[in-house]
Image 1 (tube, chains in turn orange, yellow):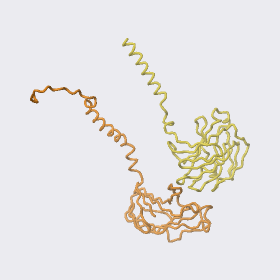
Image 2 (spheres, rainbow over the protein chains, first blue to last red):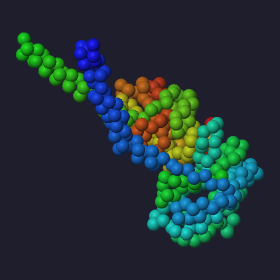
Image 3 (tube, rainbow over the protein chains, first blue to last red):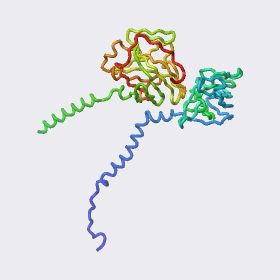
Image 4 (cartoon, rainbow over the protein chains, first blue to last red):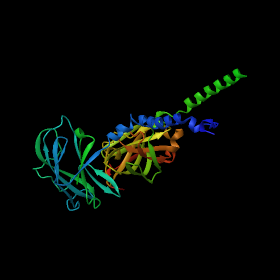
Length: 182
Length: 186
């Protein structure tokens, strides 16, 4: 008996086989719908997360139209300097060369350090101690005009808990990028 | 038979619509902050703050440094220590009674803790002052008032410290003398 004479037996289609194209469409459309639902909020949120640029001490980094360099970062004994009770004094010194000033920017400098494995942050000191910033240094960060200057800022940190601080340097004109100067 | 079923199904759907509309949470509830709760004397931590409310009382008049606070109502007076956990924060206090919010006074001449910025490991200690209606202890919610201590500004969906206080058990003084807020713990 030749092949053409052999009776053809009909194989019943399974449910999966019958619906395969619908299932393929679902497999594509469900992830696509998830991605589309994330577009209005989640992706902009990701884009606005800080992008940290690590810079070693003594190195220049071009940021927000300026060359920024951390020249010195010292932790001083707070007790010897009559700093507020329970604090040490951190003195950060910068060389800043504003080359291409942004149209508008606010520069913020804070001190960061981990305590118990979590990064903490301190603002510039408001309280006073015996440490005084020498006259040759500027006391405020300013990137609004082209000029070269040296900046010195003072921070108070909890005594003995911040042996190895770093500086977080941000400019609204460069958001969300920020410098982490070590 | 079919018409009866349709009527019943229609009424059922209407009832379901009403139930959904009636039970939909308000935006105030959906966006409510996450409160870490405690009682007087507890040290309570939120994402941003660590706070201890040592004691609380009511007073008809307060004296804070050179400022003398009079009121047609009554002062809620608390002594608290607050510090930041991650970064410096200006703080805000509010007392909630029956869902009504009473904010910390701004009349305290800078002497209250909520007019200070607190930093990591640098606590501030001092008074919290909130002006309340004179008959507040008779309010139904007076037994479970909630003192919220939060970073200044919008606290929707944020982490806050909440202290539950029974106002009816608090001592009521004619006049209390308070020290302005200072750096450090109690």
